[in-house]
Length: 141
Ligand code: TYD
Image 1 (cartoon, rainbow, N blue to C red):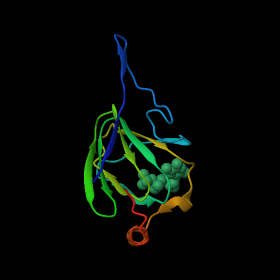
Image 2 (image 1 turned 120 degrees about the vertical axis):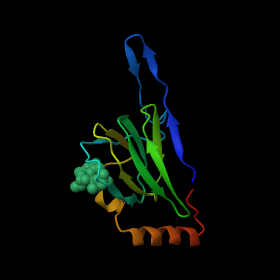
Image 3 (image 1 turned 90 degrees about the vertical axis):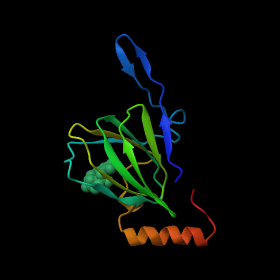
Image 4 (image 1 turned 180 degrees about the vertical axis):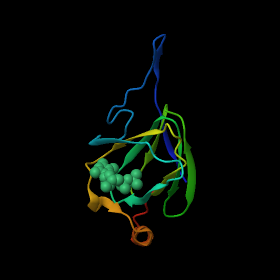
């Protein structure tokens, strides 16, 4: 799978480090929503959905977690553990997040407001929608 990591420039000096996130600069979309996931129990997995249109960048600002990504042809496990790297997730990618470290704070930048209608929460529906796209010739990449 074509996993897209965005490597951020770190502005560092003797006082410490700083990363700036800017829409259409190092974040490839207009940022309409920011949320963060924290205090997730280590034996819990979450996600289990894809989005019809939403694009996201996930940044483990503290700690680490794993994420399983699935597109129309394959699945891949990714470790999120570097706060200098954001994971870009396009639309129509099924994702499951798990193995959160106790201190994990996962920052998510999203291209749109929260909209339950944009969620595909049923795995069979996800596979169906992907198949529809492939057969219509509009190949998701
Ligand atoms: P949920 O989608 O279940 O989280 P995850 O994908 O990590 O498993 O979201 C948890 C709850 O938070 C659910 O009731 C929806 C709500 N929520 C919002 O109100 N706004 C948001 O921006 C997000 C991401 C979730």
